[in-house]
Length: 426
Ligand code: AMP
Ligand code: GLY
Image: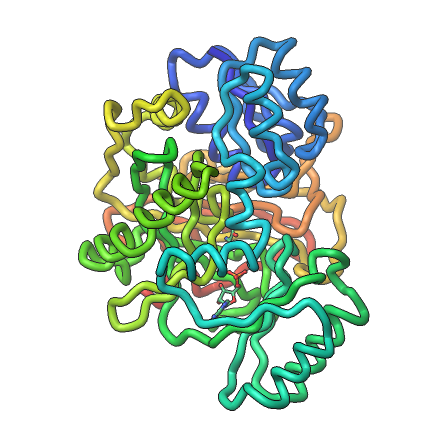
């Protein structure tokens, strides 16, 4: 069979790597892919179509006999790629446009959680600056508070504010300066949840679901969780915070009611469901849903899946998820992201990349590319996050140490990475 993976990050490189391991898979196409997927060779082949060129992607899938398509990132989901492929009789892993609103509309997801009594922060929704400011003046007594643009903002639409002035300034940015355009037309102001964050990922056919291991991301650019928010600077799995008891609470209080709620409302949720959690004294609360796998979390949870990835995905689109194995390795994984200097603000690209020779012999390491390009045989940087270097180990400590040993062997001008990935869990 032939597989098409849509996206260009380290998450999609990891998906290509594990898809290619299935012996029944003849071709793995990745659109548009990156320098790392270009270097894979064998079954894997980059296709120069962007992730949002929906009609072209469908035409490619039809012309190239693609049997299964996997959507990596949220943008094509919000545009309705799953509806489009299904109408054409093509199998695809992901939620429909209506179901993807769990991620693409924070207002939808908050109201959905309220309707179904799913634990999350209390909130109010605003459509204009006047009513938001009135709420800030008259109702808000305790800080911090969290202000969120409702639409997709590439992870940048969330502001934690510590006083009234900051709150009003964010409201001005969203409604008057319109820094996120239409994605900021609706705004959520919600309670700040104390606790520790972790993420849980499910693969579902709408009714049945299977869980990957939990993971913890590192969203800030700087060590000790300082500086600006990024797409994610590293992750590890499993997250010790998510004990079997917590996982059971997450299933009963969050995953099951979410799937049932979506079915009852006529938009069954299919594909990957990412639940971003705040865990406070063993009690989970939903911070956000994402309609896809996480990046960099995929780079730690997929290597820990012992069962075949493609077999599970096929079962999820055929409604036979209960009949396939979905077992995990009893190991740990860590991934460290190497970014371009200046990221998440302005950064330069086109830097030559060098690998120390010993990298190829570092046992248990997987170097997933994100912002790299292969130009006439030369690998150069082409994005903010450039690599996600994953290592497995018998313990978290071992996987972290291994990942950092590999990171030190990769070089390009201005490269930056966090030195404390996983430190919190040790
Ligand atoms: P989101 O894009 O909704 O995941 O938010 C980005 C980050 O903001 C989260 O990973 C949390 O660290 C933080 N955050 C969002 N909502 C809350 C909340 N209600 N309480 C505390 N922190 C939050
Ligand atoms: N790592 C956060 C995300 O994928 O949204």
